[in-house]
Length: 118
Figure 1: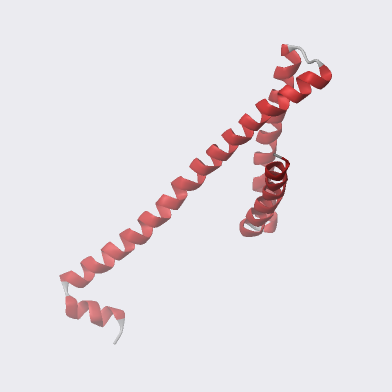
Figure 2: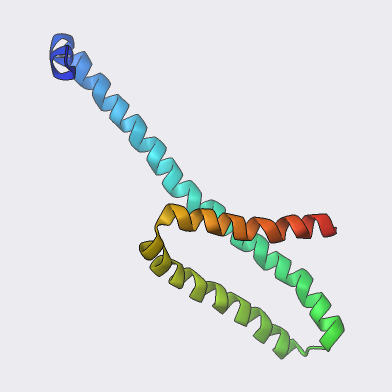
């Protein structure tokens, strides 16, 4: 028995059931679509807070003026923007799944080391 003949026997209920199933799959997809940028923003904010801890060490070691502190933080942020723009090119060239795995590995190692250092 094929899907079409089965839904024909169910009539309106079968069509409605298939529509609800499609909407559920779509809502899960949209949930992932919106959750990923939110978590990325959270992670970017966490990294920005990490900069504030690092800037204290730089201030102690190099006696940076407030203008130089701003330059250092701005340079880090601009580097993040350039890296994000460049990542699209790499994703197109090597594939998005492979790139995501590499980014996860490259960001996990330093965070584990930072965790173990504390």
